[in-house]
Image 1: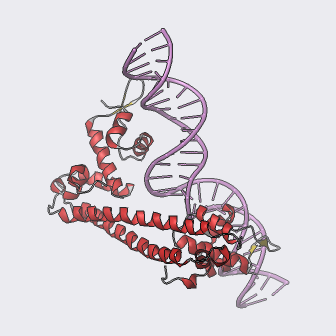
Image 2: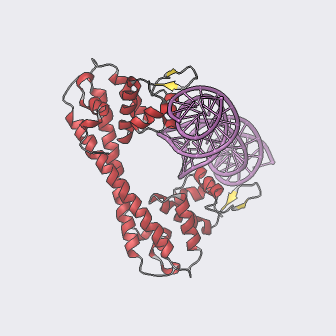
Length: 137
Length: 137
DNA sequence: TATAATCTCTCTAGCAACTATAGCTTCAAG
DNA sequence: CTTGAAGCTATAGTTGCTAGAGAGATTATA
């Protein structure tokens, strides 16, 4: 049996986060030692690894909850799992696109400053005056 | 004089957010009408536009606070303004890079599923088994 | 076996940047 | 003068954790 610290080291999920996941119902309440400390088996280790992996990929808790639910029913169609992953991919791409627009604008702004005083600083000026922007972010 | 609703419409900042910014000290407490409602002048309109623009570019409240402080001192050097902008650009780029790695992995996972049941769904399998990943995200 | 060092427990609060709700008051148009 | 929209304060909720306090449990060493 693994203590919460063991589980944490093996998965890379911090101890308070493990307890948080338990509270959120992502993992079920484990057995306890005689002194009331959590004791885990490899079942929970695998489940937590799944969660960690999904979080590292940026999936939201709710999506992970759905995926865990799905993975418990091996005989069901996997359309929903694919849909969740595809939606997350689309969101990720949308975020990239948005950040790239910001990147371009920030680059333009930082390159544009050749002054040395705030009064003619292009950074400050750009923020004050949206009309200076190339892009309708 | 502008009501908080006028200010909101002109800047695109929602009313509760305007009040939140006031609470956070980004904008100072404005004059009040005889009935205790907020009344703004164009000074506050410009300041809030600055804030909105900076937020749209992804700058954090603390960074904006610094920039506002700087913009109040036109005769000071603008090194700090440039530094803040450059740091934010670097952070933005780092986030893009990370998201692109996730995108690649998500794409691989979603394309990889040719099963129709959960039991042989590559999405679920990938999440269960990190070793299937190409990239050490 | 005693004791010290480390771990774990629960509970509460805090983070960022808002957003939502409730219950009340004020404003502006007709 | 009435009515409906807009505004007020205060509090709580959002997401996904993280930090701290103060107590109890476990383990390693003497």
